[in-house]
Image (cartoon, rainbow, N blue to C red):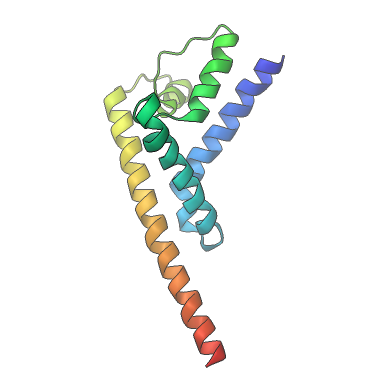
Amino acid sequence: MGYAFLNVFFFVFHTAWTLFNITGWAFRRTRRLHLATMLLTAGSWFVLGIWYGLGYCACTDWHWQVRAKMGLHDESRSYIHFLLLKITGINFDRGLVEGATLAFFVLSFALSIVLNVRDAQRRKRSAAAATG
């Protein structure tokens, strides 16, 4: 029963994390948190990826371990490929999915950085105007 709960937990948590990584930059109130989640994701993919393979995701690894304990052995290397397969039933080209995932990541990260810098400059100007 514990593994079944963890399996559902990882589906919900990891999917929510992924959706937030794609959209969190769009809302001023979530931009700082979004930048943090993007940095954590980049750290997993590119820093831990030095030892575990580029694109390594700790969350995916833990989810795969849970599913293996349940006797479920998934062929997808990427969580996004796995999720698309589970949701649509379509086995999309893995290279295409990984390329699109990276493109969405880079775009979302760039937007997050630009908008966080802009917001910080606005806060600074606003504070200066209030004191000056």
